[in-house]
Length: 306
Image 1 (cartoon, rainbow, N blue to C red):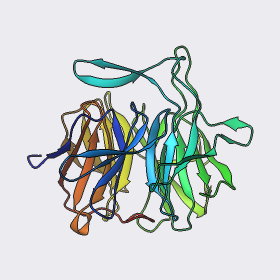
Image 2: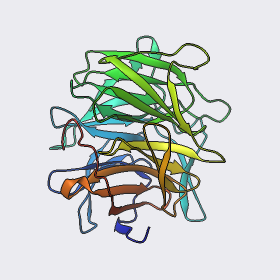
Image 3: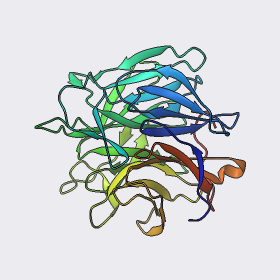
Image 4: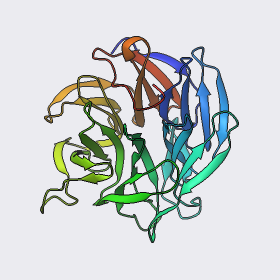
């Protein structure tokens, strides 16, 4: 696309963009351990210091930020691209955090689901009932990798349940326009799954051979990986696609609608803003940039903060 516009540079592995009411963008800098505000003129301001590895970011019903914190990683730069590598020495613990945007106060809501510790929470989406679904990608350590899972929780810290397990590096998560379908992207196998929602935090599940009860919507050939996702007003699933450096748009029927080259192999997330939500804001994490371009269908309104 020729209309890609650079908003900000010099970010340390940005992800989780959220459009604020004044038109600025809140996002996380995972390698810096912060929530950072990006103004339209490219200026940045640290809003909170979470430490660890803040990843997914969303606004809840109380106006606070909710953060999937993966617990931190080991970062290196090669050929101008910042990326994480497996390591046992840079990891604290996975957790879900609530952050007050007014003063940057960080509160840990969840570090486990029952007896099982959260390992690498990655992305989250709120439903219209005020709860949120989130993925736990697991942790990629020097000699091992965890199974991942899908969870549902309340923002007051009172309830967390396991929705689907095990999954292979579950990353992006989003809801269909009618709120009846939950989409989850597995990163390493680049597979997009769908779950039909029965009630908040409960989904219907397919039997074996589905590995976790999900319905396969689509998968990509070759060496590609799905990172985080958004849903547009037409019901298409808009996926940040790793390694090939693209935004991949897939219909609810599993058809590839379009692919947009970004130029960054670590393209991590997308959100929508502007008039009629027809501007896509995309985080190019390897190069440390936030960019924007026009979007034909418009983005889907979020449950809160939109």
